[in-house]
Image (cartoon, rainbow, N blue to C red; front, side, top):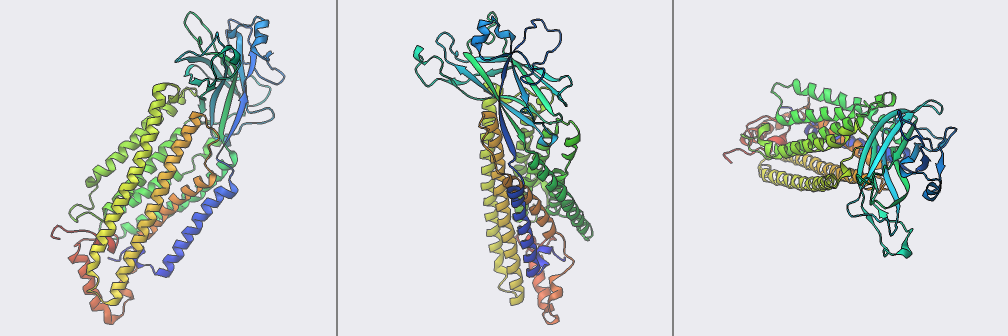
Length: 541
């Protein structure tokens, strides 16, 4: 067995490879930190109060807050009362974006948060468990003169959670409630230049619709979208990294198939990891610039979920294959207790995503955060996911500790060797331990990224739209995944060079005998590396 590149490559070349990968890692962080803008932008819109005097509408009438066809406006509700305009004839209109700007497909998505400005009145207080009913319509157009085309229409219900910090007395009338922001809308693509939102708050005393919700003075929307500059940098990274991983993956598997023995489980899992990395790399997002593919957010989540599952499973198998008895290793079935929960957790993530973004494909105003049960479920899911991610990392640290202890036990075979051979194997052990520490670092950064991503998305729904992760973190972690997968496939590819070929003829007999000691007395089996064979514990031990 010739061994893997990680054992047979000279230290000098290995250091060059390591430094090169480190420079690319630094470049990945610098691209996000110095070139790309922030990942997202948040813009606040104040809804314009328009008057809709057509009581029985046979077709939708779109009310514009500004422009040549702007609606009849109201400054406040006192004006509406003076003009005898009923609440059902008031429409809150919001145009996205602001006047003089255009939306772009590079923005990728639009997430909108709803904020209600509710004033305290002694005779119109917010009741316990108040629910606001919203009649909302969304339209689009691609120039300033064409007619609006309806995109979605829905009746939505949102639970009000408001606090009034002052005493509820007549002196404090007119002061504002402190209300939590409400999830409002999410569109998975930005295929049009202009969007118009018309919001109605229908009142029906007999059916108790919008009764006991206080005196709403204004409606504010916070529109969050991905920055176009960040999108271009992200797409460029994907376009550059896709052929890099694809080429190394094909090269790796070609070397595996040239061997006389069949590939072992570890080699198959490394190849599967390369496939999952290639799958998440393929820049299909380029098509979202020219096509109205609202399912791209959901598809991106699915791709990332598959990669997470493969990466977490790989780390378990990578450590486990250096711990198993020879009778148990090289069998995927022995890992069902570890890999099973990972697959189950990923499936739960998929179901959770389908319950929100899947429904949003037909109704962009739907949100699992809209109800108390949905909010508690989503919050619980984020908390449990974070706890499970931390527990996984602790378990991985324990496995790495066991691998190190197992290797230390095998080092008792080294003193019987010649000095040159002993130094060789000590070098292999050092290289393997260093790779395991890099693996732990990569795992820690991945877990941190996963938790921050979940919390950041939750903050969007909670309304804290100012929370923003720096672009360098996104590009750096993404670059780290690619470089790690690249390094694993490169270092664990079969080498064409044998260490014994570099030894002198006089040392050849001793070397052969020592190889037999390590490869037969210890393992009796082939594997990708000498460390792999050293750590395989036989039943007779």
